[in-house]
Length: 211
Image (cartoon, rainbow, N blue to C red):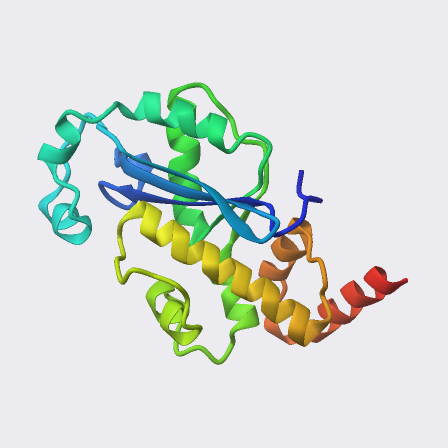
């Protein structure tokens, strides 16, 4: 599945009760955008009832309260719908290791398994936008003047900003590194390439594209 274009995928983000599903933390919101041919084509957003209390710190950070999730659909139902939404697509998230842990944990609970690729926009940004002050999502949004509503720590808003960041990185690769149609596999390998090897990585990719 990783051979698909890098401008045809789903960007997703979770809000959660804590940092680790292994410690019993659960997802409380999922937001995602479908990118097709370099444009946002569809959106998915749901607050969900995890069946555990949301800590006050998380309520204050996200604005998602225990009262809000009390009558929301249960995680299992929402994640079943999300499984259908992402079917056949690769995924992107900012700091993807965090979101991937929750994605796989929530899917395990409903006996689903995601077999596509998952790439990290934070790792990609560290390689493509090396002069940014840091690579937090809000900083990159300001650095590249990305469309955003100034709202962070809500899943759909974060997913939309991440989608615009991803498309901005694809533009940068076209303009600065002659990567006209980067594949998802190219972007995934880019995130794993040490910075001192990037010049060689780009040269090899360009040679393959024009051979």
